Length: 340
Image 1: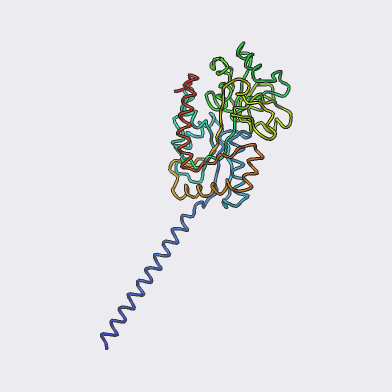
Image 2: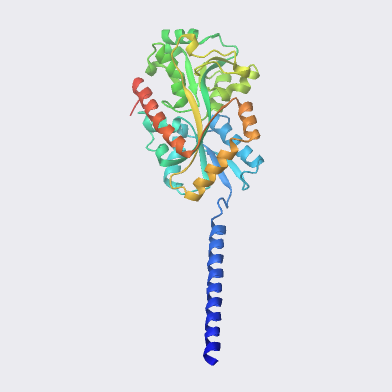
């Protein structure tokens, strides 16, 4: 009887110990999940340029819709980090912020161009980041003031060819970067030596437009979405867009560069990037969150407002796409004699 009672006590003790152990393990597990719970802190989305350009507008649209739809419950802020067409920011981000899951940034072809070009070459490129998603595509635009004597692209290029020193081309990125390439590509195809073109760079499309309106430039090359409001206000004239065909809506009357007999196209994709050593949890969070974002009515409305075309790619597809784009940009820079 005593042996049976002792055995029962031992069995009961064992059960209690197992139960306590399981509770302990469960609390550890739930504690770890709670500890992870990305994102815990506010999220910063960097536009590596001044205010008013394509990166800035994209960053603000991205954070605005994520907040409005409550897809991200943490506070989201936009930070402008101008300099070198994004190269200054990349030097800091790739070295000092490579594990900062709470800092993302918006970029486009300059992240490739800056890394591949000869002048002002950046040692850092998209391979020093974690590509999260491509969001949109846009196109380049050749823009003059509304009172400019130039009514079409060919008349501008003919004057530029006759005497390049008399015409100042401005853009919101450094020489050899995106805005510069948008401007010199049609000129190059028209038979003008790229090196002969007088190009002045500004930190962002907003500053380039200000220079144009202030008579500090004769023409600017930028993205079409950046000049929509100035076009609607009657302050500028767009001589051509680098799209494969005419755009729709209020931009339908603007001719493409190609239809004016100049074989030049340039697509401006825009995407979101994270740090190179982003955690798996943070990466998966953004894959799920951005895939939901692009399906919302709020995002679709924002695209329409800004005149952007949706061109969503998730992180994996975006990474593959960037590899192909890198080759295209390298080929273009080689043709222009601007590769490193």
